[in-house]
Length: 323
Ligand SMILES: Cc1cc2nc3c(=O)[nH]c(=O)nc-3n(C[C@H](O)[C@H](O)[C@H](O)COP(=O)(O)O)c2cc1C
Image 1 (cartoon, rainbow, N blue to C red):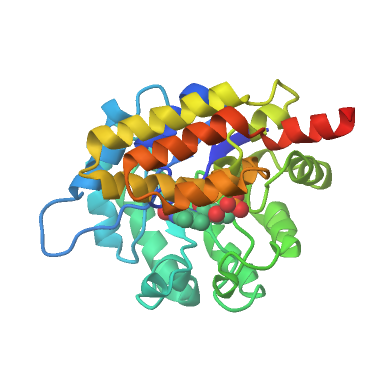
Image 2: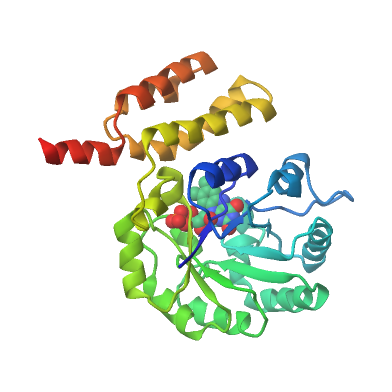
């Protein structure tokens, strides 16, 4: 199975990716959080975006930059800039469900305009020789929309089609609509990658058992919560507390180096703990202190207490079995 790390805006930037590549599983590809073309300026990237995709910030990992737009000209302008930086594949975001994006008919909002989407694809595939992959939801309001969308995708030489089988209206709720995924797997001309709700080893194995023809998966929240998930899936030693702590420290220290101010660092770290907390079911007290910390000192005290004194979820399961 080929495994990709999903793009997650605000979280899986280069600092996270590099730490994950060092302490977690070696992913086949990482997808960058979306880059949005700029209007009223010649610049292609803002500072944060450029820092994220700079080749020297992504050495040793295979990064695919992602673009969010519904204007072919803007897409091609960014594509050219990315090509100059040495990228050979770019990804188109047709999945973002956020209302601010969707009302502008971008992301999953673009799925509601199939004819415009077809024209857009026509123009971008004509306009660049870079590989283009697509990350898509299965529709805006109704999973039935997917048949028509797939017919459109099949007219173009997509590098691959990453299917997150939810409609926009699902946001991240409900379970993925596997019937639509099966349809996509069977009828897509492009190679298909599955994305959605692979949170545990059991989820992963059930998926592989049910879809033996699918050779690519993309994981997001499952890996954020449990950076050792793929070690577990592949029956390797799970990530231990010491490694988890080093992984955390690497991200924390690097955020401090690049972020301006304590508040920003705390905000970024607390965002991560929204996911990490799943690894420490017995750490409610410490997690609460992390959430409440208003200074780096208080944050560090709570985190150290957690790493020193609270078992990871599988350690508590083992102790439970022994007693
Ligand atoms: C906080 C957050 C940020 C996300 N940012 C992006 C993004 O920039 N581009 C994108 O294509 N998907 C984005 N997604 C969607 C994920 O890439 C992925 O499709 C989704 O989480 C489902 O996969 P999972 O169940 O493995 O997490 C985001 C999701 C979350 C929760």
